[in-house]
Image 1 (cartoon, helix red, strand yellow):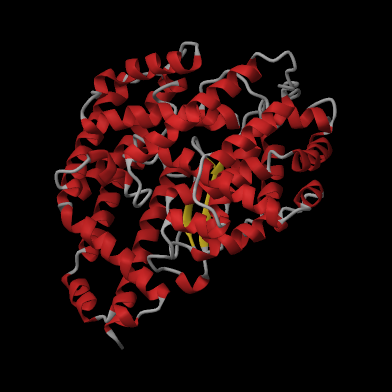
Image 2: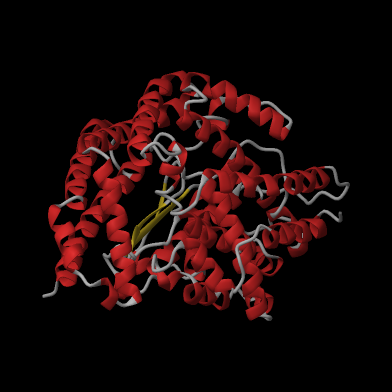
Length: 492
């Protein structure tokens, strides 16, 4: 056994334990009894203690020193890069702080859920203040005098900076606002969805959609949760969705979105299983897959024609007057509060709001006590109407309860990546629409598997996208796609 072999054997055990910790998180959000929350918080803290100790184990430094990196393959070099990156970050953060964060975020999940149900931000404020304080402390340890927000952002999008993302968002905002205002002001408005759709039938069609998009249910499962998510990697990748009898699209497109995440994890080269590169390259790269599955493929005119027929068969009546009208219904712009239910145009405006607020929270420019008022003020300025209740505003997302500061901007970054990938895919797959119209998504998903998913975290995220498309990352493909699509739907 070489030093590299010893290191990788050790690392596989660490990755396996991390997967166990992730399964505890999945259980917490799906089937865990309410009364188990205090014990689960201690369990999560104990797991973090074990993982932290393994990440800074002195033997890792010895193995790294003994490895001749010049002799490594590109795969081996990428493994070392990720191991050393995790080690350096863990060395900077005291284990007691890591455990405190794990304990606080686990306990806060149920506090947030109860506060959301009661539309009462005040009942969540103390828990969030503790989380923000702990994450600021962690950011200071990681930043070493540098930018606090960038230190946290690096967990989700390695190499990205808040400044660069701000520049990207500033370039997107004017065209998004112009397109939104033109669409909402158009005399040509798509039909609203009609009918009522039982939850059980929604879930059956959601399972069919998941299989259609390539989700392997022998290595996964679909459950319901308050906030849809995907969990796991390799041979055990699980997703959740939700149902609303008056809005079946919430279920169907949440499912397709999470299937995009899940297929990324399921399609990583099996040789990388339980290794540092056996997962998505970043959350931005991950979102590129979920968003392109959901939007450019799932909401395309070709695919919605196929879905229209399936809905009519499943529920016994049509959700719109015809398939062409249904395409407009699926993509209809409406005023609304909820990010996860937003159309493609307004979705990014919801993300920009969260990015600005959480950046101010971490840098100390905004106190948690003032967060709800700041949210409501910003929302009214950005969207032109008032937030009616906390569950439609500052309490709608679970991310801050879970301490995921730096995560939100990766949603819009993923949209940008998806725009670049879709543009390249259309050039490589000229008859894509003919395939989608038959409910055959494999032409597109195979392309994404080969260009992106199989590589896992072998490449840095921006390099991965540039390699897949042959072009530098740019906001232009996304904005051009949105302007063309919604210009047609709204006859602008």
